[in-house]
Length: 382
Image (tube, rainbow, N blue to C red):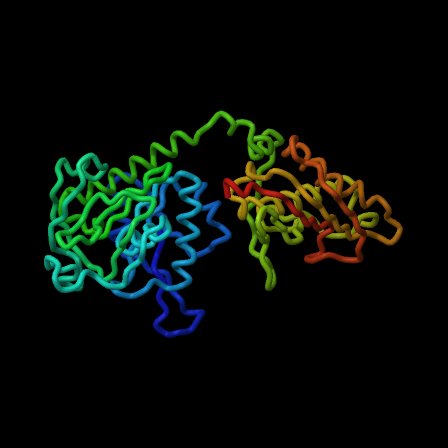
């Protein structure tokens, strides 16, 4: 679930993610495990591999969402729809998803002449506020067991117009109170705040969302998993390390379209350099090859962090290997073969890559080998 972002001091370093606890409590009560997602666009694919569903939460009533938040959430919705993950939008979340589906975000509610409905009767939506009419045959009508309900309310903005969604609930003044998206997976927008759990109808909304999320997760467990890159790695008695934080002012990997470039990685195992020294002096050829393999594993960890999962890799462009070596050492290519051969074992159908193996006087942290990698990843699944 997405949080809001607060920065009362106006200082970039003091930004704080914040989300009301009752969102998490509502998901937990319905049988789900709530996770708060920070605004890290490059990790959306990885987050969606972990998550079975997405909740776009509300924000301060009457205030436009922060540009940083809106930009991130629109990308998140796009990726979630492509991945057919269930999506639940609440208040601001409903308006944002509806806008992405083609509707119009309105900063004003119906004016004079309409049947009066108070959409923000109190500062906290902890009491029922007005009635809604629910469309027969909709998922909401199914869990409600009828077509009339009373809900709380806390908003000054609204969703209007038409888009790739079906309006399934309205207030008496015509304000859209709920929609169901015309998408492959469940996409449900709710204008009120069901996380306050006033009628049982609210609880049923979260039960529907969690059950659909669980069902979607069950269908994603395909037989192909046994042939995944991680499974091949496990068969070799290896596992990916955690993607380490860069030690300087750069990122571990960056994506541009289908191309992911991974920064140079040294052979870390359990966050410790496997060994230090120079080939041809205090590191043997086989020790150097093992270092090349571990440097590649660290590069693949960075790649997976960006791509979401290694099975989205569809090819490689270039592997660059740097070998700290004595002046008379000439087997740089044999050292980097340790990385190339592991790449071939993990990705038998798309391993071919261009390569360079270069001898250098020294490398960061005293490592004997550093690996840089450029890969192609699936744009459709990212």
